[in-house]
Image 1 (cartoon, helix red, strand yellow):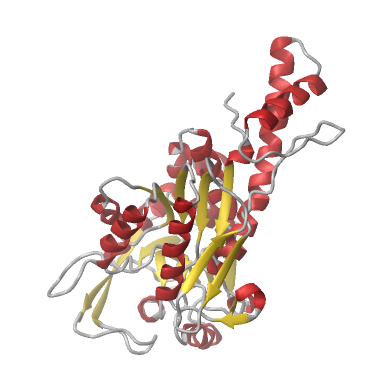
Image 2 (image 1 turned 30 degrees about the horizontal axis):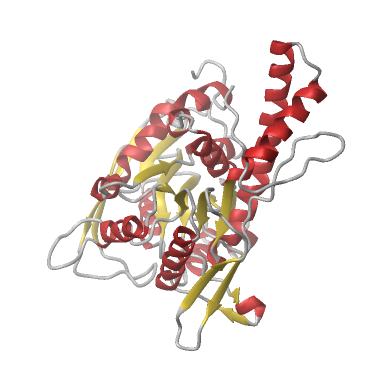
Length: 413
């Protein structure tokens, strides 16, 4: 059994990602206690030692080898350090941002957590300043934090960014930049070794990196688990629909996993138009391939921005006789007035539920009856733990077997 000293793992939370980081740390502590106890039990059996003696020896080794000492308690229970590194963020009058680590991190594996889509007021300057940041501000905060961590002598730097910034600018159609790859190159130049993100808009973004690794997670297990509590999977009138051609692979996964038929909504877009809100989108024409009449329809997409695309797809499904409509999104951005438009659509009976994750921090959205929040911080904690221990993460990235065994009705495997 592999065991690595937990004190050599540290979390640095940017202001936007602090709420997400705190939940991840809670799961990390629980997982390390479990690993410690399991390791002690196995070593006790293998070497014919008392469990207390094994725990004492593990704590002793941790104490003399760790870069951040933590004294064990008298009862010799697992000693789990405070993973979070105290950090001070300062905003100067001209808008510049500085990150300063209060505690040393030399020789530790650092995971920097940032939510670039957090649009709520945040505290800076030791609480003296409250400021709401844009995506660009969050991104700059992440840049200066990476630099601070590298300058402090960290062994490795992994970025935990549930929403990858500028991911929708991943290909060039005219005289424009490929900003998604440029953001990654900046991460590389600052010394980042790996990026952990959720349902990146285009997997090709990772191909643009020279050295840095991209670990692209999926929330399908968590979404299906919550979906199973809303609708029965043994319903014969259950259909999976892809809201556009770009979401075919994602919805094909759900349709194949759940053993359900797959429909497709085909859209023609006018890319000369920029989407500003849910009623002003760039969809020129929309068609449906498949039968949804009288069916419960489930659609999955990577994100909801202004929401216009999804609302238009729901309208088409209703026009074609669909019954209950449910949607799932990994990245619930809900930009602009999106929440208001979905409130109106829900009141009009256009859809039943939207399942989203806490990859983006929200307060108002959680108050909606139609919104189901899925917590994915345990998923990120599992990945962080395995990367720190040098273990494989393939079983987490490809979770079809876990879904089939634990979530699907008997006979659906």
